[in-house]
Length: 313
Image (cartoon, rainbow, N blue to C red; front, side, top):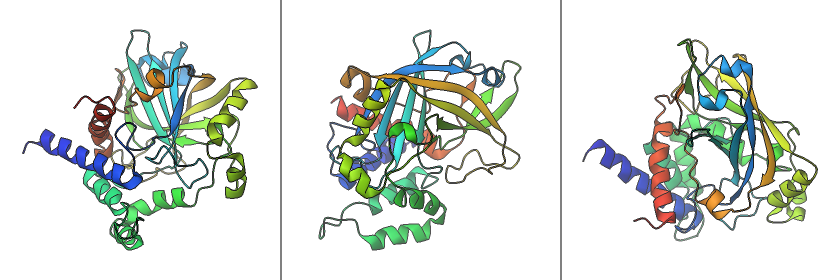
């Protein structure tokens, strides 16, 4: 079997396992199923323009679509459940193309390879005898993959957010930025909320209801735009650009790269959101991916999922 066929087969198995874990169907995303999109504008800083020739960092206002989501593959999962949260940004460029940044509330990922990710999601599938995941299988996975314990712990011990715009979101992968002068560096993305980070107790979140996060954000936008600062973390000597399970040291150079302003919830949540694919490897000249195996696998898994959603076979 050729490498592409093996990769496509692995992507299918991962999506199937995610569906079994959540009990979800093919009419929605295999993960981060419950979410909604907003519209807004991004404007880069001069500091970002000095580091990359990519069009979205030109300094001109760039229209964006932003999808906030819960990590679960179930549309029925309440917002107050223990879960990671996602923020996916699609930059709509002047030439009609697009480029995406995908980020999560956790700072690192669970595994390094697609094969390990299949192990991870398979370990979380419900036991047919109990209808619940088997703690022993999950424990065995963690023992075999200690590098994933930080990410899993960050999710398990998280508290419900006060709102989607009250979270920090982190790009788990590194990207190579190339400037007009040919200079190169690897960076990771961090979205920092201008409203500040705030969480709720589980009891407070339950009182707000199963779907409180969308209602909260709609109310927040009635008071004016909500905004995030995009901050780059620049790799230093010895930092691994291909391992999403490892944080880079906290003292690495940080660069303020731009400001994202959200102004409204998208009117058409089907065409303007659920049919969109946010792919971290949808890039423009001046930004390249890394050798990160999870990063390079993601488009294949997304392709399996979107083809099922759109019933393309």
